[in-house]
Image (cartoon, rainbow, N blue to C red; front, side):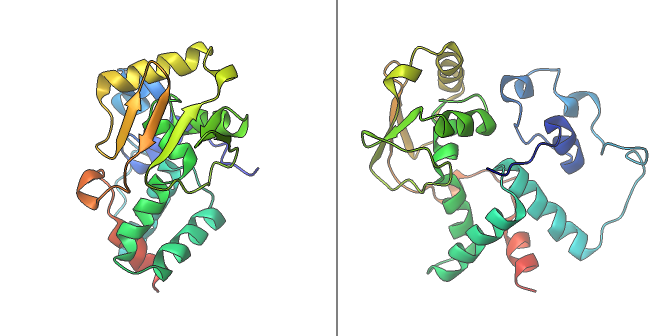
Length: 208
């Protein structure tokens, strides 16, 4: 499985905001954005004025890095969203939030999307009682997501679930932390998703 192996903190610094790629570290003062909020590299502290295309490209790269997708995967997801009825940008975000690795992360079964993806790949997640090891699997409303029995003893999963519970779960999810089990109630509405993402810029970029 292809994946991005770039340093996580460098990715956050490149985009100029927290992308929450390092789990609990992102919620502490050890976060790279808290220490050095400028792009990495020799010329990182220089003020660079982006063109319209540059702004669109940076937004697309940011969204792609948040969800941990490579360019081909992300473009394929966009094409699928563009073919559906409704607003393309909202369809795109809903498709990304419906990925099994993202749902597992949102439910607290992994401290980060990367960790949640690893748990999925290692047969640690059940969907409606059946083992699914495809991170890109599209979860449907009313699907029940559960940590597999052999994985429930892992301390990292328990710790991640407790930390997620303390911060609160999204409205579109129902999670039982004790049993490490949850229900994907519905696809999230745009108003329920982070306002830091400007999906219209991504649509404009791919529409050219």
